[in-house]
Image (cartoon, rainbow, N blue to C red; front, side):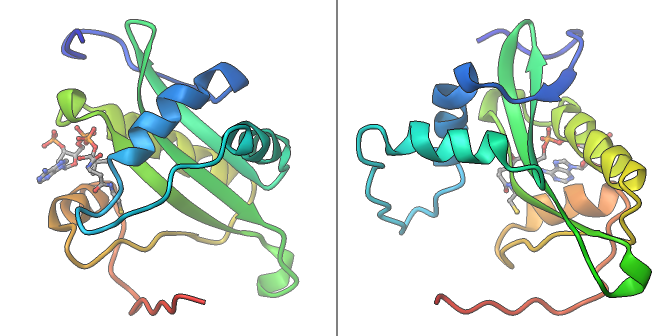
Length: 155
Ligand SMILES: CC(C)(COP(=O)(O)OP(=O)(O)OC[C@H]1O[C@@H](n2cnc3c(N)ncnc32)[C@H](O)[C@@H]1OP(=O)(O)O)[C@@H](O)C(=O)NCCC(=O)NCCS
């Protein structure tokens, strides 16, 4: 793969043809100890169709030299609290290993923040595993502050 250096990074919404590349990128998010069973044939396509049709979530991809090299998911949730202002969440943030440190993540997150602001969200929040210290530096550099303590249970 060519390096992103010098190449323009373009952020757009994902489309059906991005599925294979997204699955490759999501594989990079799996923990070394994780043993996720591969999706059954057709299941990924069905899920991706639902994802793309969901009005509350947008899968953003970053392209350089016409290649998808990073992605995140922005979820904007309609909300009765907070005066009816939606809240926004970011998930599945990942950049191809060969393209890290070249501004791809920054371009994706800037677009997520812009869209959350445009939607009137009162906050844009995310959770990150405590072990991902490099990602935490990335989030801090994008203006995220550690204002809450995250809890999780595997239902
Ligand atoms: C975290 C991640 C998305 C960052 O994407 P990226 O494209 O490499 O980040 P950028 O090049 O846009 O970096 C933007 C800023 O973030 C900070 N940053 C990024 N990576 C960093 C690192 N490894 N260490 C310290 N700071 C870092 C820097 O301040 C950087 O600005 P600079 O280049 O001017 O110094 C990417 O490293 C990644 O995919 N990591 C593995 C998956 C992961 O951990 N995802 C998060 C799950 S919660």
